[in-house]
Length: 374
Image 1: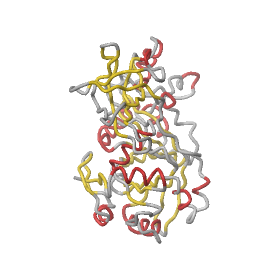
Image 2: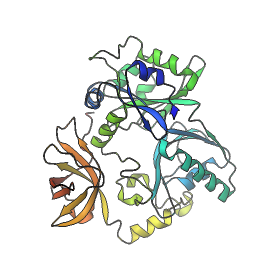
Image 3: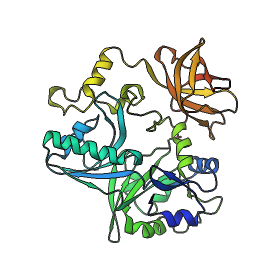
Image 4: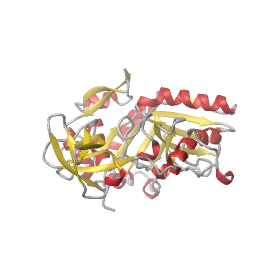
């Protein structure tokens, strides 16, 4: 297994380590629920170094990413991040990514750990097919990535930088920490405000000490405390954010996933951009009325949680399937996401979820389940 540059930090904080996408990563420290609440009420520190980081540069870098990604890339400004999908030829989702524009012809693409090798090969195929002059550098193992999320995170960052708290959402800046350059972005995957920091592996120890100085992360009332993959998952579910392998996948049509804002089906018209892989398949689905089932939120009665793969039933027949579910620490009820026949998606519509041992009563709910206070 690959080991994160923050492994010593995890061991010192008594993390429960597990294998995830070929990496040894912290599932939790004190507990999933307590870490979830910490992020919602103050701030959490996540190690996301397992996520892939590709630097794409050269004369045709923009053309390659326009061809690979479902959103416009050429009109991005330097210092801007953009969420997009990468599709296969049938319109299924290879992965969801975040693209950073570093310079005119330099980009950074952050991908999911489980899809790192697959996307690298895909980008190589796109480059070869177009005979594009592009240089690609997999920087995953030479860098680390840390996410700080929570309502008090920007307050903390403001003690070290005047610039970062003024960043708009989906923007980033490059900061210097002695001899190391840090990319600090304001995106997030929890529904809370916060930042992500990408930095050289050699600078991890120095950066963590600098960031966490005067904070006892083992104290119960600490402003920042570490949070693991378990809390990251429950937080993203409350925020209604899709996850590859659950709401996103090679066999799942991109137009059904609830992220239509990330799909520019007309970006190739009037010379506005390159057609992306899978565009024609998605256009056909759109022109034929769209997918039969769409991503939907559910509130589940009782204390038993719905799980991935459980059928959704209405009127005695299957009308959908659950993709994610958990007890919501913030709302105090069980929540779930899944695909549902589009004519049943009116808020409040009653359905049942088949656990294999019985039926759970549920009703359609709006996504996201949770929105942070502004």
